[in-house]
Amino acid sequence: MKGYIIIFAILTVSCVSQKRMVYIQQKQNDNKEIYINRRNDLLIKPFDLLYINVTSLDQQGYNFFTQDKGSMTVTTELLNVISYTVSDSGAVKLPVVGKVKLSGQTLDQAEQTIENTYLNYLNKPSVSIRFVNNLVTILGQVSRPGTYPFQTPHINIFNAIGLAGDITEYGDRRRVTIIREEKNNEIKRYTLDLTKDDILLSNYLYVRPNDVIFIEPLKSRWWGMQHFPFELIFSAVTTAVLILSYTTNLSK
Image 1 (cartoon, rainbow, N blue to C red):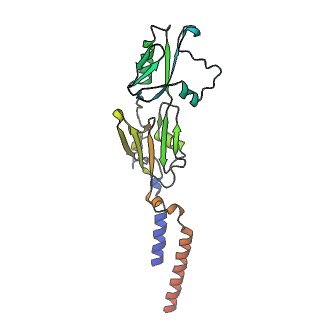
Image 2 (image 1 turned 45 degrees about the horizontal axis):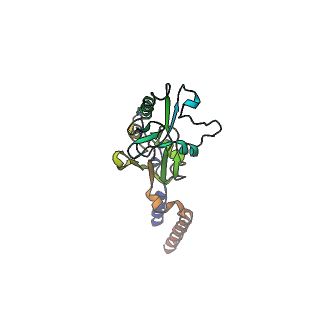
Image 3 (image 1 turned 90 degrees about the vertical axis):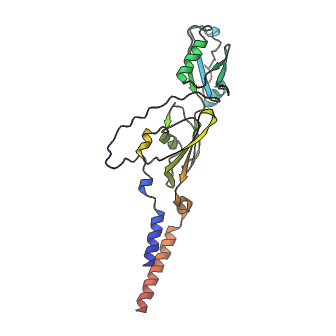
C-alpha cells in the first residue's frame, strides 16, 4: 500500500494542471464573446526617439528639412541615426526653429504642433512622426527570453509573449509581471493572470515601449521536476512494491 501511495504522489507532483496552461478562460456559464478595450494613445515622453518627416509644396532645394533617401535603404539602424531624441525637458531640436516642446502629446498632436511651427517657413508643411525605439523585454519562463522591437503603435501582451516563443510548460501564466515606467520617473509593477478573461478588459492588456515582462516559474519548476528521472523512480518503486508483495506472501 505504501508503494502505491508513493507512486501516486510522484505522478501528482509531476503533472501541471491544464487550468494553469490555458489562456483567457471564461467563467462558468459565461458565454461572452465580445470584449471592448479602448487603446490609449501613447504619449511622447523624455528620451523617446522620434522619426520626424516634414514635406511641403516647396521645391526640394527650398525645403531645408528634406533628406535625400533615394539611394538609401531605410533600416532600423538608419532610423536611429536620422531620428530625434526627446530631451529630458521634453523638447526636440529641429532645423531653423530650434527646440519644440512635444512631451505629453500624442503623435497626432505633435504632428500638428510641428506643422504650426513651420507655417512661416514652408509652403503648406505636412508632418509625419513615428516612434523608433519600440522595445519590449520578456524574461523568465519563455522559450526565447530577450528584448524585441515592435513596429505597430500597439501590441497586446499575447503578441509580446508570442515574440518570445510563448510561455514554457513550467511558466506560471497566473503570475505574469509587467514592470513599467510611468510619469515622473516612477517605476511600477503589475501582476496579471493570463488564464482569466478579465485580462481582455485590463488597462495592462496593451504593452508600452520599454515594458519588461517577467514570467514566474511554477513550483514544480523550482523543484527541478522538468528533468526529474520519473522513469527510473517509477521502475524502482514498482520493483519495491513487487518485492514487498512477494515477501508478504512468503510470510503468510
